[in-house]
Image 1 (cartoon, rainbow, N blue to C red):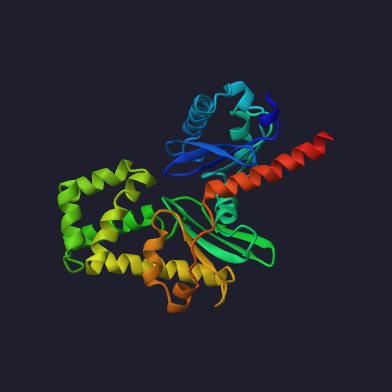
Image 2 (cartoon, one colour):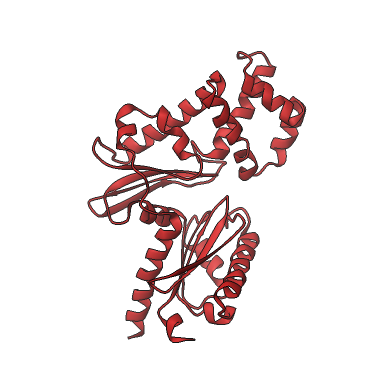
Length: 295
């Protein structure tokens, strides 16, 4: 291992949309991107994405895979539900010194750094986090079957369900509903799609919802309003009070800002960094622990 790599770390942020893997020496960052990963729904696929990223990083950095694998790495990835599954995932990877957590700590560290505040992270899935008086707290992230309110998959699934209610004449016909019926080819095709759809598949319906909401479509506005209501209720339970900064992170989250209560809208700030930035910061913390233990 070169002298530069002796003080370098690896960091990975992975979720339902993509994985990003970075090599950082404390000054410069070399990053690559691969596909989606969730270790609960597809452990083997997640391992393959990490290995693919490592190979890409080797090409981009000029360092062999075997050498990169010796660097301490912090992995924040979707689907970590406890120590057991995190351990199995770590064992399936080629790294010598690795810490695996879910993707919530990396998102919190990236968005807020060391400052107090809360985040509502809504991507393909969703979760919430608070950092108050130096103490962190997390909620959600339990997956599409039992949770993920206000996520892109939640929005997409809700839009399709409401479209079928329109077919049953249980609600007023909307332009969004007509669009989705045309997009999928009819109600039977929507049902067939839903049988095998993964969260990311439902999530790909969400941009239609946000686009129609921007045009004032009643169904689309209703869905985003309901999502924002879920966010507001959860943030209050997590300890949000007027004056505490709030970050809306993840692909769809900023779309909900206009539907939040006015005080929450005013509290919204831009994230200080990305989840990958958070993973890099946590990787350096992990590396210091490792080096202290070595001494």
